[in-house]
Image (cartoon, rainbow, N blue to C red; front, side, top):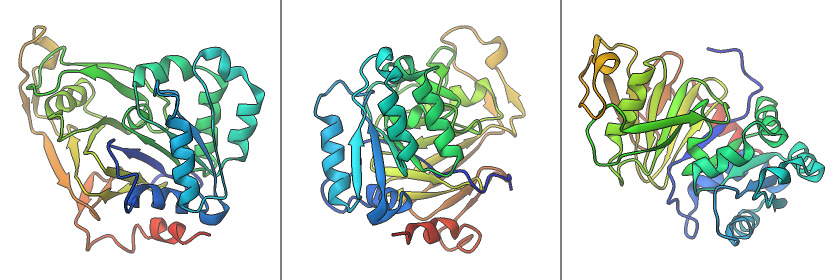
Length: 285
């Protein structure tokens, strides 16, 4: 396993998560951030709704967090505010809301805020994000593309993300918007990357050991293209359907785990001791 024991959890959420009833995903995030001692900073930049930051602040406070605030960053100049950097320095949890991932990447990309998020996560602070906030977590981000389509050249566009992980590429609203085709296309660009398609009201809690656990009512689809025996990506014409042979695909429900290093999937009743860090951290506070 990688020697990254100090890194914080990375928690991509597929969007459309329960924010009213049980709120399992958010509750677990608050616990990882310190429970009653949690100091959570929300970044609602991807959303153009003025109420988004305040809505998440109200919810996290209702789940028992000690302190919750949000950064009203709507343009790149806002990222130069030293108060916002100080807030991230004190945060024990960081949450990126949904909206438009290109809005998020073009405003935050290359700024001190983006660097601070990476450094805080490397220092042990959990970072969660939903929908657009999930997509931007990886080094290579799905910026857009076609839903309800077969894998084809040009069916997905990529852009740089925050780079919290370079092992995966993430898609969201996955089953609901039938995005398997575009995730397969994205994975075929670089078979080293593991494609993760996350359904709504579902999250992948990626631990510092490189193992993630599925939490929520939907599934996480894993595309492992490392074993490709043939790909037509390199010589296919724009719009042409792709041939991809030797792919490995897993569909994981709640409680299942996946080892991003060993590229192995486990049902809920296996690997429990091997990945007990998540449960141990959930008891904090």
